[in-house]
Image (cartoon, rainbow, N blue to C red; front, side, top):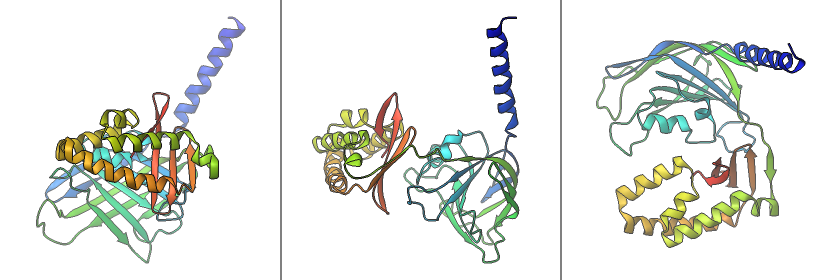
Length: 289
């Protein structure tokens, strides 16, 4: 056996050892929506350090309890997480739990289930308990989270638009971190960064009603929203809307505070309540809004 082959086998062994060292997620439980019962089969978790300062809590843990597999990346981001888009498309059902790991008295629960009508928002529950009983036996380490959670509304279902929710689950999952910050740009560096150039081009295209260019500068996820807008409004009305949006975006562009980059994703921050997101797709930065 040559030294090269031996080195390759050792590397391959170490890679397999690393892969198998991550104990996969496990969950037992159900989600009930009116008279429908959904078995929860998969669990994922993500920790967000809130380096951007845009979350409603100092730091955030996200747990997805789902009826099928979803990408771990679908838990990343600031708001409107990709997993919620999957739910709106009918590609996953289950729960998204979001809470501060230090303050366990409050939690936001999003019901991941395709709305009954197009354009409707996902159902959310704002739960609170001063005695911190939203979870049982919750254990959070640097690499894993486990515990139990349950909830049941005591009312009769009026409609599918305001469903009666009940859930119960016991889970254990690897705890992944948001991608590390690779750049934090301010001043001229933020104004002249690749993301700012993309946004300037997109604003120009929106002003002209040039949706082909808008789509070229945008992510697949953003383009899906643009296509929906064009279908609902029609091209003429969409062009009017696009010009108004471009004017708002142009005003925001004058007030860039920071651009926080995490590898292949970035957030351009204008204020604590206003920002724009970007993703690197096909080797180019694109607008994700």
